[in-house]
Image (cartoon, rainbow, N blue to C red):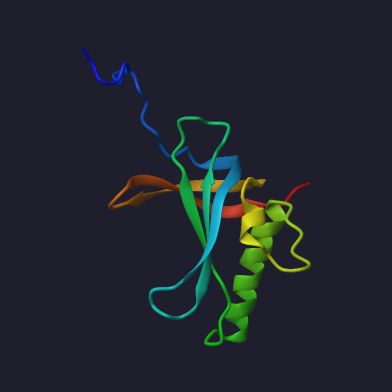
Amino acid sequence: MSFLDVSLEDTPRLEAVEEGEYQIQVNRAKVGEAKSGDGKYLLLYCEVPSISESKDFTHVLMLPNDQDSEKQKIKKMNRLKDCMDAFGYDYADGIETDDLEGLEGWAHLAIKEDPDFGEQNRVVKFIPPQ
């Protein structure tokens, strides 16, 4: 007699998707403090909803801080703007992380090898809506 009446033999493994353009969805978003103490970041937990066997992945956006040069601040703000534009988020009054959950947008994904988690997807660039 089995405790759980399930068969696990044919369960597929979650895998990183091949490099390319995908519609992605934000499952969760949070702001954190960098361990190095040099600022905050926005962490997005994402998935490719159209591929049920795809691994979830994260995307980190460092936020500008007082130690950044003016050019570094502009680069960080542009990365954040490109991300919000891809998800169609209206940031005129700031960004509320809870409002990001469930949003969908397009991004070019690549694969990177992680020593702890194996192949993972990463966002190469966000694609603005047409």
